[in-house]
Figure (cartoon, one colour):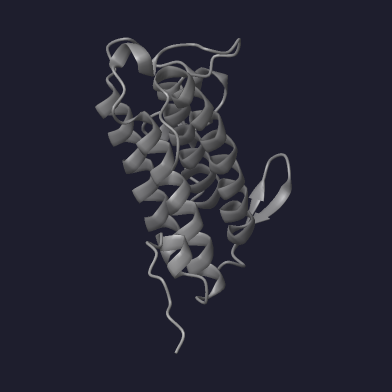
Length: 172
C-alpha cells in the first residue's frame, strides 16, 4: 500500500487539471495575493523604503500593479477612457510614487478593487475576445492574462527581494 503524504496546496496547484481559463485565473490570483502579502506587516516607513536606485518600494509595487490592472482590464479590454477610470490607469512611472498621506491599507484596498473589477470585466468574455491596442495592434483576453501573470510574477520577485532586505521575511 502506497502512502501519500498530504501537503498544503495553493489554489493554482488545485487547478492543475482544470481548463485553460481556470488555470490562468488561478495563477494570476496567486500572484495578486503575493503582492499584497509582501506589503502586509510592514510599517508605513518600511513600505516606502527605497533600497534600489529606481523608484521601486513595496508600497509602490502594489500601487503600480493596481495601475497595470486598470490599464489592461478597464482601459484595454473594457475600452473605458482612462479619464473615466478611478486611480492611475496607465501603470507608468507615476504609479510607483505613493503620497505620504496614502496608507498601506488604502493602497491594498485600491489594488484589491482594481483586481475585483478586472475579474468582473473578464468574467463573461471568451479567452479569444480580441480588442484593438494602440501599440500592439490587437490583443486577446488570453494574451492579457498571460501578460498579467508575467507582470505580477516579475514584480513579485522584486517584492521578495525588497521584503527580505527590509526584515528578512522570505517565502510566498
